Image (cartoon, rainbow, N blue to C red; front, side):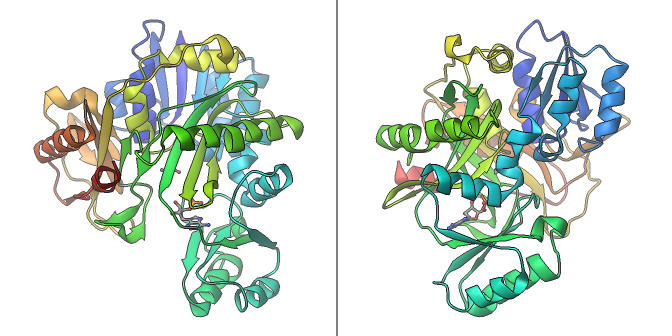
Length: 420
Ligand code: AMP
Ligand code: GLY
């Protein structure tokens, strides 16, 4: 089988490493992939958002199966285009990917179907948003409607900050058209849990839970990033919480999407907050999380390709999806200065025995060298019987991986160890 994986970060590297375990996956193309992924797949230099370029490539290659991993091409409708060419895909169509593509859509869906989430108001003009933030309870949360590279959420503790957030999103258009509408919502408190799930629109199978560490600095200080590390399972996701989530959130969400004639097939990601009133949805993503995938897939004992094909063919009900009872920890090594300003182009050295544990995010190949080429450079994942062992092993690996200017958080897993 020839498989095409669209995307080029650590998440895609983890997906490719898992797909490769199935001998049916004879050839894997990564579009565009990266210098590290090149060790596991054939990288084709076509950007994930270059829909026409991808379609041309598919017309000239024999692709038997496609996995579309990032949000942009999903929201742009790449799956619809590939299906029109007869290529079976893993990933939602455009009409279902809107669950991540528009926060206004997601919030209205939850309100209509009684799915627990923060109370909110939607604004389409800056004047009404400014008026609202003069009187709403503080802190308040201001979100750009559309995709914003994970940066479109601003938490305001004062009226001044709230006004500045409205200005940034709606007037300065910091996130372009994504800021044409804003959601202003209630500030919720409680531990956060990420739950990725497989769903074919009929059956939903949650994967093992995880915890992201989004802020750049230790102890959750500093700017928001794409994610500086993850652990799985998340100790806040008890069996009681899991069963509430299934009944109050997961099943109602897929039923709601079916009811709206927007059947969701692929990986539906639930960003949850466990509040004192129970679990609530912070966000939906229409894709695997990054770096959640780097701890979730290494714990998947079932074959990923088999599960993905069952989703595509709508027979997930008959497919066994089994996770290990071990724990995993992924520590991201970034370029110092990320997420603001950083230097790149430094040689990366990774001991050979760590090959299967390292998921490369931002690196390019130059002759036989691997050079840093992004903010998040790579992640290293370790698995062990207990979380504390997994954390210890991951940090021992980090010490053995070198590139100039490397920065990583020192406390990945500490919060989970305190909860656990
Ligand atoms: P999102 O991109 O929607 O996941 O938001 C990014 C982060 O902002 C989340 O992981 C939360 O930490 C925080 N956040 C988003 N919405 C809320 C909310 N209503 N209350 C408190 N924190 C929030
Ligand atoms: N790690 C958060 C995300 O993938 O959106």
